[in-house]
Length: 271
Length: 181
Image (tube, rainbow over all chains, first blue to last red; front, side, top):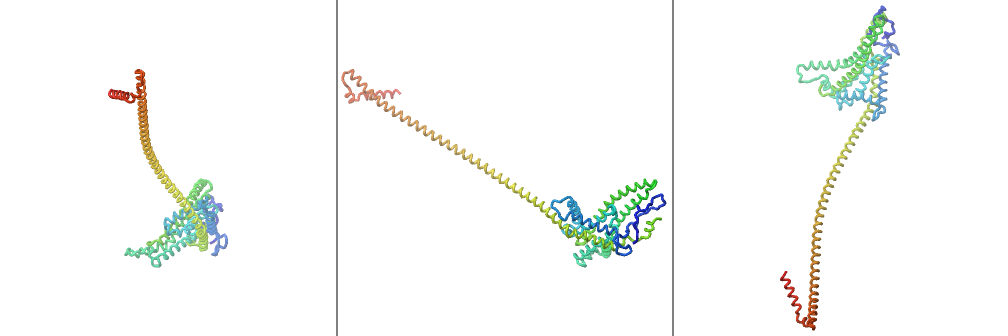
């Protein structure tokens, strides 16, 4: 990795100035390390800072709300309880069920708020970057979920039973059994963690590119007649920011919902 | 062309290959969140949520108990009220019966006393009448003999007494009066 972050606004590049459009691309997702050398494998950059800051924000918020909880809640506690209850009842109880699901509530709550806050950095001024648009973060989370449900499967059904559960093995299938087992194995064991991580990553990546596109265009078009188009582009920045706010929450919800359904599948008697 | 485009061309790294340092930081960041939520904060709030539910349910149980108590009291009250009504009716009935008996008794007693008084009166009148008749008979006999003695000139008293003339005369008078009646 080398020096890449030159913000579009730091250039003085406008339309009709004989200057090409500085389109956003992969380089928009690469950051010059804040600490350390970009060429070595030990460094600290913006996304890491945001990830750790996000963790502190989540823990700080819940600490303020739940460290000394009251039976009659204050405003902050009420908001935090609503969020907690949303994940607990709205996601975990709905998918895994109350009896089996209770054990996984802390994990899923942490997962939901972690993903959501990491997404939310996208529209926080100055930060303005969704941490989850770097594949490492969704991949780390997806890996934890993957290990969780895989180990649960074998713990619950034993080695052979576990594989049967994962591959949907059923003697009644007859001739198509090998195909089903093969497909299920591919789908559940190999593709599933990949799609789980990439779904989140790609959504946030694309959202960030869209925001960048309209933001950069707003700046780039600020010249002569282009100003009219720049204003349209700027309106789109606002609209897309609102849309991103929605998508961030939806993606966090989907990520946790899928994690829950994987755990539920692992606990289920027949896949 | 500008520097950005050149940089973009240089950096054609696959965005799906996760850089390891970010992966590590991501795990650490998530571990921090999970640790605090799972070990301290969520158990905290769960305890309070349970307490709250118990408080609400306890309150409802208390309210239910109070309602049942009130219902029971009302039943008891109604029952004792109806018992009291019956008792009162019974007493009134009894009193009426007793009163009627008393009145009848008093009336009988009064009747008896009246008859006694009347009977005593009658007896008194009869006795008075007899003594009066007796005295009258003696007086009349004496007056008659005195009168006759004055006319005859000598005392007829002893002979008249001996012969009971006057008595016979008076008896006759009485008999005539009896017959005339």
